[in-house]
Image (cartoon, rainbow over all chains, first blue to last red):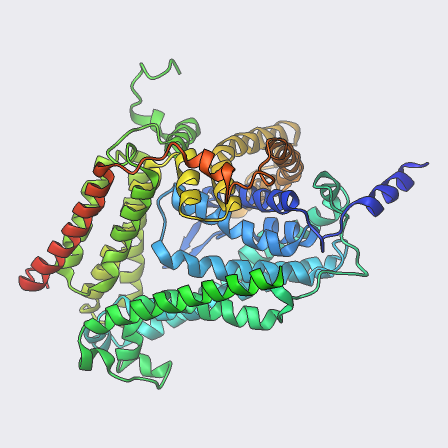
Length: 304
Length: 280
């Protein structure tokens, strides 16, 4: 048998990405975690150029996540990579935003999953070009929407009213930030390296993990867990990410002048009920969170 | 370096070697401190209390009290100078950035009070997370997560990563050095040093090619070793394997006292700060 025949024979016997054993899931999770963690540390070392208030620098190495998600099972890479970021660059270095980090985790995971499913053929340069850009856009647009609310919630409604320009200032800053990130993290450290790396790793990385290389004819389907639609999962992830902020987000509801631009819904819970509403909101968020958790567990145990 | 006998001073602290050592110290919790002797569950509970407390108030007095307490705890947990410097730098940088935004893009100095609040909140949380995770070595952290019924994969992944990342950073460094040794140096820096920047970027990206393959091999070896010892089969999330792993955890009265004292402090801070709002 020639080498290529042996390889083909091996590929036929290797598992496809649809059916993974427990240890393969663990391998993919740990691999993407450590690699993305290292990439994150390196990205922090790369010097940044300060242009006025805006920093031109690499916020993350999106190519690592995209290449891994394009070659291996995207769902597990999507879980692993943001976990690596959380553990290494955030927890280890103390740059940990507390519970609000869950928001970033959900956004990044969703972005990586969508990007990984977009690459049907890891040899196609066109798909590899668009995947990191889509990843950065999904990550930054969902993040930006929540970020603006996040800026509003930490600030008193009174001082926000007095500084009317603040909201628009942050909107401008977010917009410019997204453009810069798409160029640096999406194209320079996303699309270009991915186009170089993925075709070279294709067929080399998967056998090490005991996996069949991705078949362009049968790409991973954009399906959520338990055969739900990915869009439902995406919407749920976005809502959950926003809900994480709910404990402190009461001012969005209480806000008056500055926020009415964003949403017309402004009942004055806090004025009526006082700061007690804060604790009630937190309790409700906790109950909803636990409810979702137990519902998911019930669904999973029934499907098994 | 002749070990710990020589005191590091001045420019010696700026070396990459020192940064790596400092990262290792953080990852392996070798500095000691009041939280490192506690049960991991107690440390995680302490962290949840301290990190959640600032979100429920908009009084600068209460926030200042909480921030000071977190700072004292962070110092008592013996955070290294690298992390403290990074933290101070980040806090200052954020403040300057937001102030510039407020003044240049139309705003009001009255917003500074609000900005001080958000800085105090984020600062408290950062200090608490530094204190907690500097004091938990990988083993304790994964045991604590497992004891709190987190998925076994998460616990393993976190402790494996904690141990591996310093090694991988080292390996990455070696690969980059190899690239720089073999490659031709760029002909000059170019306009704004773009040639140098491009070279650094290209090497940083190309170094990931061997790194990805090496790490995949290493991961596979580790997971296979785990499986031969029955990681999945023995069920480390439930049953005998889990009990065996968690048998050494002891939740002592001292741990309970730590959590009780923290809760008491938070309640007192809210009471005092609400009664006498000195700062606002």
